[in-house]
Length: 559
Image: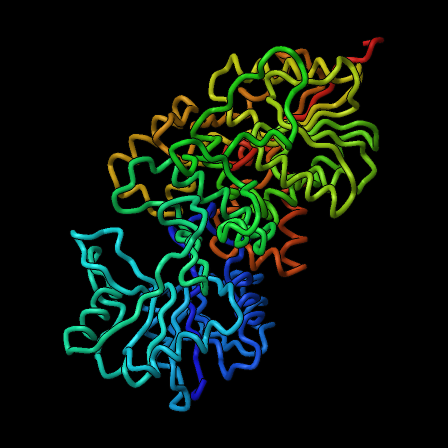
């Protein structure tokens, strides 16, 4: 390769929500991408420029740790709170590349080199006379002419500048890669295409191998949506399955796509690639003869995206820290603990590290898989698929039951009563229940903080939620119930528990825009946590708190 190469990557995620931020923490495509670039570019004169719009510490550390990477932090470059689109970020990167660079390579963070010599093989095509080479996008033809796409595209720097094409500034229907392609071919220049070479297909667009040089996931940091899609839900399920495969063992995924090893990653029927992942038969299921109640489909789809992993530690830290304080003070000092709706094992890992014998139960197979991985890395605990309304656990065996989610996912009062009755059943006499709930004004607060209340429709929805406590399907990522403190206490007492307390977890302070920075400051964090602890039973704080915790015990035999 004759000249120096600059690899340009815009690191961000879309849409920007708490859930997608947690998703980006759990699945850092930029780290995966930089690893594969380094692995496959030995002996090549190259540098990497990354424009980061996430501000996620783990992402920033991954970028800084790469020897050849130049990190451009969006807020530092253009001002606090500023966030560029992917397209505008590419323009910023082009402008920052030095004159000593001959070749520009645009690369999506979910586009990963899969072959040694990938850079020389692309620049060689330019040496042979082509103006650019890039991933072929033709799925929208004839509505949109085929073009080469910046998910992986190589062009001489001077050629790029000569076109006068910029990536930003277009409308919603604008495709800057098409504009670039037409700017080149319209002047008589030829472009080369990286065409799909999969021997085995998982999906028409996702998980493509292009010229056997680059893997492109296709929707790494956004939900799967494609022109002409007939089943967006199936697309999204396949995206999540393939994402897990890419992070679990990327080389194995590539080998499957190349046809080098048997496909053990997704089911295939007689008509071709499956429309969604196979049931997770290896992550456990209730062994009782009666089928467990089915989880809500919207809730299932939401959590199968993987957004829960890392949420408490990185996005909702105040809720997590306060919950640990309450649990530490009120649970028994040891024994068997059932973590019902335990998600990916965040609390279970902590409980196990304290010496509890922990059984985690969750209805989401992905969560159980993630929990088992956490148990393998740290203090051991058991995890299996199950439902809070029908626990596959014997009577009177647990010293504590913790429910950190089921009560707001179970919208129907009868379902919540079933879950609480199950907790009572599996507890020994004298055993302790700790159950969290969403506060009645939680969604109200988020709507105001996000300035969503400008819409009359949102105002009516929030009013309905405050009056009834119910968020119906379609009003958010999943149906939910928000409790008032007295309502939560009454439901727990109705299940037979005594000595019931209802406590405020985080108040409304999670809505502060700089809450993460405040928690990073030891003095600020200590003061806030102390005040919340002092006033956790105060009626005013209880009514406004984002989350509530009910603690009670099953009566002892002598009671």
